[in-house]
Length: 185
Image (tube, rainbow, N blue to C red; front, side, top):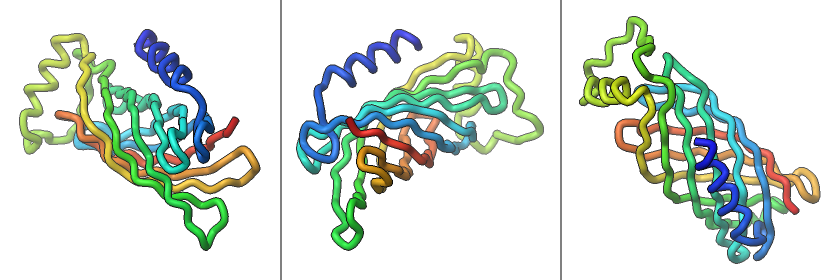
């Protein structure tokens, strides 16, 4: 996982400069909550944003979801944003996002505690929990992101934002809510 994070960081910083205006760069930290059929947990993450044009932004990022019932998740994503300026509110931008994600599980192993919950109504629940237990609890799946976001500048080089996205990942679909602080440089 460390190698993956380092690789994504080099890719993100090697892309160039951008954000807000063509060539502008931004680094953001985010906090949020992910909720899916098997995992509901808080998350922490980081994202590098690069504006390819004034309206189109590339945003690779990494999120770590805290363990819930013995299951931890992480996701590495590359999203595209199309920025719309809201003329009536100076600096406010709204954007749809679409992207690709790689989602991994950690720590399921044989120590999973599902409590008194009955998951029998979830299709193939035993198939992927048994498979994860056999592999030591670590698995990786690929998927897609679809969502919307909003950002507003609070200082000349600092924006606050909110995003909501749906991650379409085999066996681990989830809705992710997040707030972020983004530093422009």
